[in-house]
Image 1 (cartoon, rainbow, N blue to C red):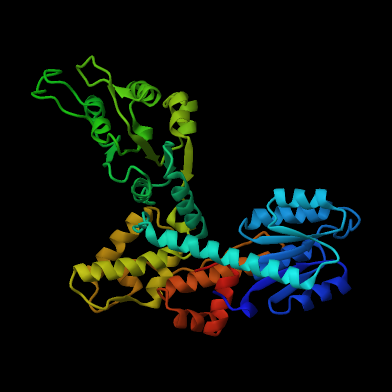
Image 2 (cartoon, rainbow, N blue to C red):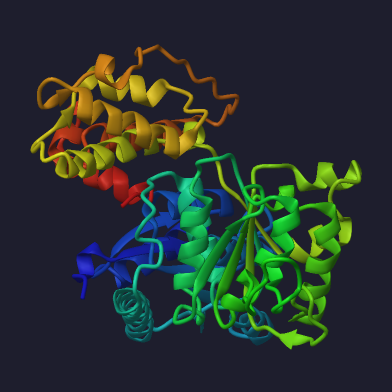
Length: 453
C-alpha cells in the first residue's frame, strides 16, 4: 500500500478557520486545499487526489448547495473512482443523501469528530487502493488483445479503450480510416478481446474480388449451382460461424449484394448460391473502409439502411500524421524487427532520420512507414540509419494553437514535448530527461501529473 504521506487528499472548504482545522485533523495525509469550485477543479487536475472532503456551501453562493453539487458532479465526471466525503450541516440529511446518490463515498455532519473523520478518510484511501489493485490484477489475467498495436497518442489510446469496451458485446463495429492506419489490427484485437476469441477471425476484401464471384465468396454455393461448382462450398460468412467476420473496404461492396447482406444482418440467416435452405449463422460483423459512406448514401451508391445496420459503433482512426509521437515510436520498433530479420544487429536511427520521420506527412500511414524502414534497413551501409537512407528530408514545422488558456496551453505543450521526446529516444527515460532539459525525477513527476505512462 502507499505510505500515508504520499496519499493525495483535497480539502474543499471556504471557511478558512475550518479549513485549517480539517487539515490539522488530517495531518497524517498529504493534503491540498481549495476554497471554491474553480480552485478545487484546478487542484483536482494538478494533484489527482484519491480522496476529497468538501463542503456543499461554496462561494459565490455559500448559502446555497448549488455550487457544491455542481462541483461533485464535475469530480465524478472527471474520475468516478475518486472518493468524495461531503461535509454538511447537522440537519441537512436530505442533501447528504442526494450527494451519496450522485456518487459521494460518505457524508459527515458539522461539527465533526476528528477521530471519526480520520477513520473515514483512511477507509476511503484503502478502498481506492484496493479497487486500483483489483483493476491491475484483472488486466494482468486477461491477454492483451491489442498487443499488435503500438501507440502513445492520446486519441489512439482512447480508441483502444473503446475497442476494449465494445468487445464483450455483439454490436456491429465500423472502422473508418485511411489506408494503412491499422484497421485490421484493431478488428483482430476486437475479436481477441471478445467472448468469440475461440472462434475464427475471417477477413474478406470486398474491393479485391470481382463482382460475379463475390456473392459465392460471401455466401457459399451448392454443388451444381453454376459451371465449375463441383462440390458444396461454404462462404466466408458461414466459415466465420461462432467467430468474427471482417468486411474490409465495405464501401466497394456492389449495390446488388448490399440488399442480400442487409437481409443477413436482419435475419441472421443465409442462402447459399443455388440453394433454397435458410441456414442460421451466428457471427459478429466488423467492417472497415476509407470512404465516406454517408456521402455514398446520398449519391445513391450505398444503401442508407445498410449503413445504419453496420454503423452501430463507429470508430474513426486518425492518420499517422495526426498521432503525436507515434511515427518515431513505430520507426524504432520497425528498425529492431527488420534488423533482426536481416541478421543486422544493433541498427539505430540517427537524429536527422528521426526528425525527418516526425515531420513527414505519411500519406500511406503505417504501411508506408513500415515499407520505408524495411527498405532502409536493407540499404543502409552501416548500423546507423540516416535521413538519406530513409529517403526523407527533415523539414521544420510550426504548430499554431488557438487556445488562450495559458495553463491548458502549457499542459498541452508539455505533454506533446514529452511524448515526442519519448518517441525520439525510444522510451529511454534518462535520454528523454536530457533532451527535455529536466531531471529524471522531474520527468517522472510531469508524466504522472499529465497522466502519461
